[in-house]
Length: 166
Length: 361
Image (tube, rainbow over the protein chains, first blue to last red):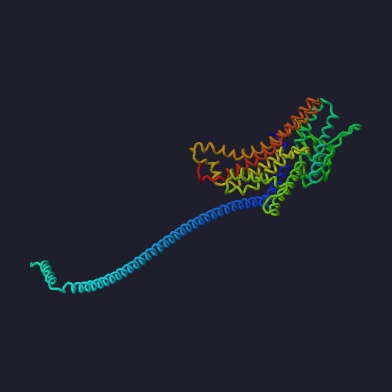
């Protein structure tokens, strides 16, 4: 200890303290301050950049999700439209078919009616002609048969046979 | 180009120091060599008034010539006195300044007041009784401190500037030190002091770390300086830690020293003086640790180098060379480690001083 104290040089201590304290203040002003500030700024910059990258990523993801949603919606809408169109087509076709059928039925019916009427007319005409013909024939026959009295009597008798009193 | 210049300087210095040890081998007897080495080491560990580079002895005349850079001597003895250390001629001459006579003792590098004959009075225990003037000389250590300070200033201001000129990214030599600065901030300052207050202490921690580290490393170069192994230097550093700790301390810190919360009153009374002593012991351990580690490292390294010249044989000398080489590598590690420990413990003490105990413990 005594040796240490003897070794102790006040001059060296004085200069060392003075130089060192000056060095601290000089370096603080011209080196450590700017260095630490620059390093801090850089670190802050990196942090900010990372954060904004993260944000951009999130935004991208949400955009993508939105896109997907829109696409899905569009697809659903398209499907609905297609279905509607198909239904419409089907209904139009079936309606047309029904209408056509009804029309055809109508035409057929009126045709049938016409045919029936024609037929009836024809039949009645024929009937008329047949009746007149028959009357003619009967007239002629009667004329011939009733030429003599016997035959007249015979017929009357025959007719009377048929007539029965009720 | 810069690198080449650096290597030239490095190798000239290295060869100079080799030259110096050559001088030993030629002139001294074997029996004498041990004491010579001892003296050399002892001399090296001390501060010096001139920057010694090498010395050689003329074989013919036997005259020893020193190659050294003289330093200014500043004495305070009824007013300041200035002259160059070369005036002392290694303690052989008396310097006269305004009717005062000064003489340097080359063994302990101290300047004594003396008379015109340069007489030195020695007591029976071998103590020098002459009066010592206050010595504010620019010694070898102070010159080295200045050199390191200037180096640090230019190094770190250039780093600071490179951020501005290079869009916030460091460039150049300083770039090597940026991760170390970040390490001190993230792994020493913030965990020990806390996020809230660490900024106030960063300048001191960074300066002390690089200062101690650079000086430790410089001590391993053939320049042969021993700044951080000097008690005055470590005392100054530890004193600053002590002052900063106690001047920035909050109420909690003092409360923990004089009236430890959470323990019985009797123990409080017992603890108070112990804790109070701790306030001084903590920085004291800092100064002794750094001093002893660097001092011991230099002694071991120099002894092993000296061993080469004692053995003077192929096997022994090469063995001690490798040993010295190995120790030198370890010393490089110790240089960093001691700087780290000093910074780390300073941060820890600052942490104690500003600790917020509101969250209890």
